[in-house]
Figure 1 (cartoon, rainbow, N blue to C red):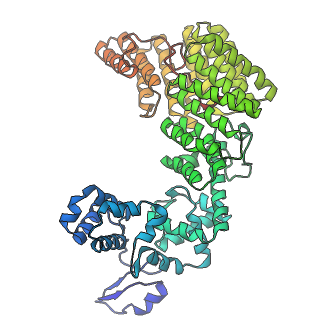
Figure 2 (cartoon, rainbow, N blue to C red; figure 1 turned 60 degrees about the vertical axis):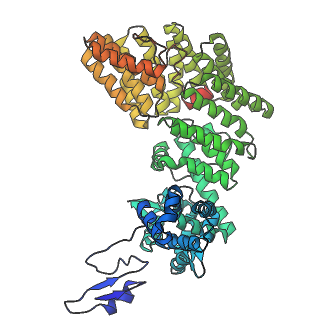
Figure 3 (spheres, rainbow, N blue to C red; figure 1 turned 90 degrees about the horizontal axis):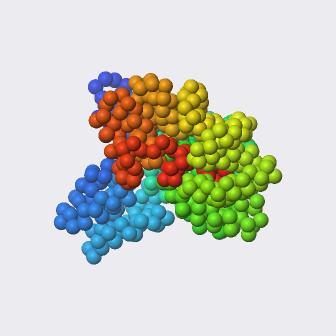
Length: 586
């Protein structure tokens, strides 16, 4: 048995390999050595939390570790499962009998300080990382430092490519070489991740080259701003201030939306990173641009959290549109969650700020949001006045989005009052603007509004044609809530035509489309419709079950028969279909 430790390259190992049979060679090293033929390869991963706690317990003794089990688990987590980090932490506690585990944990809670705390005489986690870094060539060192400015824990090759000014394929090749150097993890093909302590190290390295780090940071935050604006229903032209995103790597909104979706639940981290690094304009721009991508997936909590994180930065940003815009966006989140009085208050505040700045567009958006909230609360005269005012202003601004969404909201207002033919006239105008803009989500929403009016008039064939197209467009843009609404309306049309079996199937499909984040009023309405269809089909037990769930969702405010409205109906408790832009711009 020959053991070769700390091997740096395949060339270093090959001359040592026995030529004849009967021998085994065990090669260990920081590098993965892909150029070396091997019968078996093993990657030593960080310890899981339980194993880390066991190691700490062996170092400290069961009595001491057992006195603070929660602190022991959190300390293990902060050490990232690295045996060296755990042993250094244990050694420090051994040499400080008066320290509690919670005390050391507090010292490790600051990411900028954590690596400095994981040091004991000549042993340190940072020194181990530095050895690996020093083995890299100049190109890889530059790439490794850039990774310290990625705002998310997991990423693909696009962010490094933008920071380094390199083609995507070159950036991915560089990342693969860092994986081979064991400085980068690859949880799945095309996605990469820095260990938390390695990330701390990259940022300390980047701090030694501040101008380079600032450029990387600006580039990656611009990338997220561009992605959000291009993916948004507003389109880049709907954001009158901020950076030019016309030269972004995204060819269309679909690519931008898919890239953002790949980030999963990490988008909030991007805003937090911008705030923490003092990039106040980017924090605001990114939070603003993420509203549509997040709400279309029903991720209202993330949307609100991103806006709340960025709101203090609005007062520090150079872009003076941000204080009013972020308030308008917070109103959007409230409208989606049926918090209409709060939405109205945000818009009133936004209107005050926009008037002070002389910003007509933000004034119009705030006024539109107030009108949408008033419509939902049943304050029809005020809603008509505000939405009509916006129609005039939008025409002067040549803002097709504002015009289209305001017309749609005016149509919904007439619908709520039972004036369905007049509503259809407004919807026709809105659809013209939607088709002109060409955003599938805006078209789908307008089709749903139109279908709602036809449903009230008993024109079931028209409803089927409209909602089939609306459902296809909603599927195309990945808007689960809008697709559920479309399917539910289609099911209601089948019910009206006496086709109860497909009607039940469509309502059930609408329910399965909903997620835990989806609007409760929409789920309530789908369950009402399903319950009515079950009752008509002679299934009273199933009908009662759906009515019971609907009552629970509504806080027992409605009876078994439910209302005849929908998510876009006269009921003031049910939020309008209006999306971020409808609320803020309609």
